[in-house]
Image: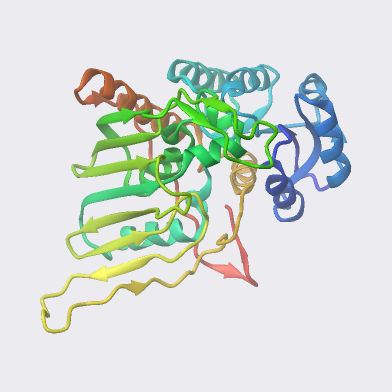
Length: 376
């Protein structure tokens, strides 16, 4: 074994685990995936056989001193206990989004990781993909001038999605916690911290009907207690305002995107649930006879395809180098506090202060050698 690789175990063997395991085993050389576990041992055994790794219990993974990093792919309600046990066992851990369903629990885990001197990372890591790194570079280079505002608008069909993914019915499965976290993480990674937020949150259809013909629960009622519609205002620390609107009671074909307005131009970004996509730049102009047309910015970054697993891999590089990781606990906690503030504001009818802040993650380097992009 290369001494620089990091022995890694995966907890949770659901649908998302396939792309994580495929990429972590075949794409990111720093990770040596050794074991997996799941609440259902049969699921772990099937994944282990499929990927040539060991099926274990979580207790066995925690007791294995050779395993340094745990990648947690379980539903959000299980995150707190799994992360806490990993940290108490001396393991670094990277978790699927959101870090927890409770800000208080997340704060406890952040403190514990700091006390133990361990890394705690959290998805989404899609902001490390080509489109958002391209947008980050454009903004840092001053292409659109001073940022003056931003907008987010996205739609989903939660009735259909809940029929195929039951975890969306669990706490933390609402459109803001499970989906909006992609947009908020992308915004914070590019534009910096938010200092206060307000919002209106609704769930007009708490009783839904399973519409998936292949589901054993087809035609049965589903209890949906989570938020399905969110309209919010974000007041960024750098002095500009953003609007944030999610509608989970619309169509399944998502018309999703982010627009960032500046004094010298506008950027239109693709769905942050993906790693790649076209970034459009509309320059400022006073030529009314020939108004400018959107320009597609060149993609000079890697990771435009489904690169899930880049977050754990980048964190492993950070651990080896002794530097902060990019998909770190500070940004994940800050994004969770923004979501919590939006929820609270909907109850109080007023702005809620955001007490945490975070540094923008260090951008990736655009240079590539033989098509291989560095995560250093």
